[in-house]
Length: 115
Length: 117
Image (cartoon, rainbow over all chains, first blue to last red):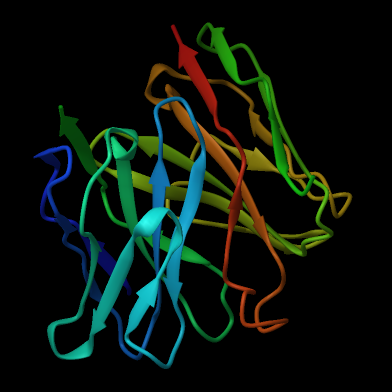
């Protein structure tokens, strides 16, 4: 069964600093990978996705993520964090084939941004 | 605007009082799903539906029911709510698997926060 691990429950960075959120997955083949963001009181918004091809994917709001098959990782990065990036971030793996389960989510990383 | 709409957004109820959380999407999506979000656990799937009249259990289905009589609607039913069902609930939808490269992208509703006393 597929699974997703986000080892950092809570991260605090200063505004303008760079950011990297870690995500490791377990899946038998090349997965579909996603990062979602949840702002306080809001639903989940898709930041970016990886299906195939170029392992460095660009998303919205200046985020990017790199798929590393050898490390089973899909870490999210941003070169300069803005105060509005404070939110909870979820990594997810999608099931190929029947797609019955659609997505399996990690437990999330809460990002706090200091002025 | 393409969206998934959930109602109610907030609800406080008491143990044993049946309730329904509605979910409606206007994107003609075949697939719909319910998740619950709890601190430290991320989102866990409750039930999903591949199409009209086709539903199946997710990872945490106990205490919940669903129905899919129409393509656009996928209500979540708590026949006899208990305090351990206090949670934030999300409905989501997408196209059927393989329709396009974006078929796996779920669109989420804004969430329904449920408290069971």
